[in-house]
Length: 330
Image (cartoon, rainbow, N blue to C red; front, side, top):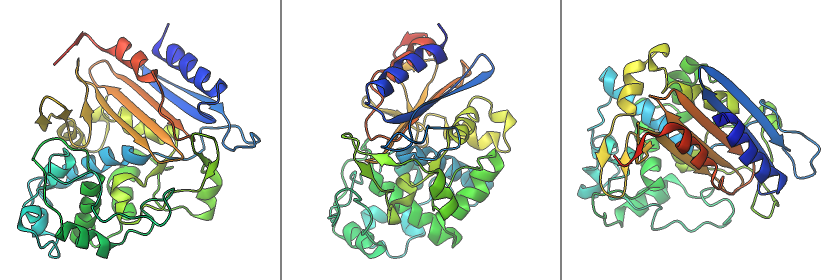
């Protein structure tokens, strides 16, 4: 059975069991791409999911940011070894000012997962009222942890500030110019116009209650991108065929090993699985959506799954592992 057939059978079972109200699956293998649309975009089950629907991809935004910084590094515009204090004058702590872009991209900066002063007024939209002033106030009172792997949304909010301070452009404009347009990702956005809202699936909590789109604010670089299955596949396939893109060197740099320890091996915002050949992986989740991207560059395989329900994909990744690995262990 092909990877697509086995993964589709698994995900269809999850949709049929209403673990996910609606989902799309994209698989690239043996030189061909297949997409399946499952379930519904709305709780009333009146709108079938299609390839045109948009999903919040959550933290799958982070590898896009990693690729962006790889491009800036290779162009000489902004080194991966730039200290954030050299860009952000409002960072007062010497320890935090010495953090490099590369350390944040590999989650080894010592910054915690979330700000110490995050106190949302709406727990279902946790970043909506966290401001730039809150960010700098939180950093001022923060003691860094060890320089080892610790997944940090806070770190990526700092990178968003670095990009704005450096380019004087909104993050959406930078990503559109540097990543989306060159890769032909015409259905990927951060902000939502009325037209785009019409293509965005309803988000749903695990009990299938409707959840409005998240307002990421200062956390945009940590997870605000909305995308379609077609665009997510375009992005993932760029790591299978870097030479077919406008910036192969940046893609290759972004998927190199940049940090390795017992707990994790990391490229630039990609997790590298403990299998051979190398596998790139990232999941994303807002409370109303879920995303999964798995890539085997050597095997020329990709699996992408997007859902409009805030639950993980169970054992779906196992099918990709079984079809892509040689031996367990790096």
